[in-house]
Length: 193
Image (cartoon, rainbow, N blue to C red):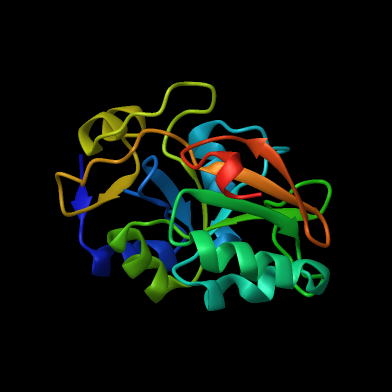
């Protein structure tokens, strides 16, 4: 297991190497958006499955949101972020990412983890996914995650704060004022919509 500092993580990310880091829900693997194919390769993930864009603050991700969904996005984001909620929204037509859904939507999240947000504040938004081989259970501590994905460096300090082990709740923007549940996670849907 190679544990790296935030400075080393920034260097790795700039040259296209992904890193593993803690979040409030599950450990994540992340990279700069233009290198997102690395996550698919390492996780053995189906290319048709979208990744999540993780940010450190709302202003950092707002430009990715299509104007039609922007007001609804901000309203929910300001109430629940940072936290275990992923918002799927139509992507701004000026943004070109190679890990969005076939419907031109993008999942965005801001984790309630100071370690993650500190890193992402420096890098800008990262393409992310849970730190596991696709289809297998996600490990929760750094050592187990390192055994699952031994070729990827891990952001310290170790041991990590305990994560919830429950994926984020995912909701998708349907139309003005309307969201639909994709997956109930840590936050009950009754508290959101």
